[in-house]
Image (tube, rainbow, N blue to C red):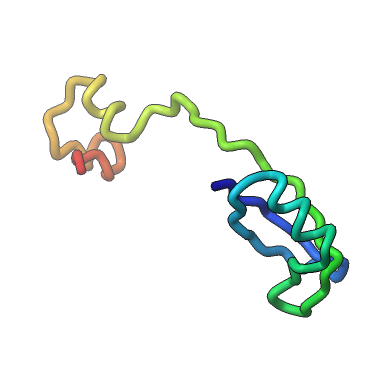
Length: 83
């Protein structure tokens, strides 16, 4: 399965799941894919931002790296208890 962010000719944005890239192409070519808001069948893929995982250190990790004993809310601003 693949999810696409789509938009219609009226700039309504929505997401749809497809079994393959070819399934999206087939549905749009035959006019069987419609905007859920206005029923337009002129649909195209919208630009999507890539999913990027960062190495951002959590508040809890910062507290631990400073060798503070939880709860350390006074020193680091809170939010550092493990989940």
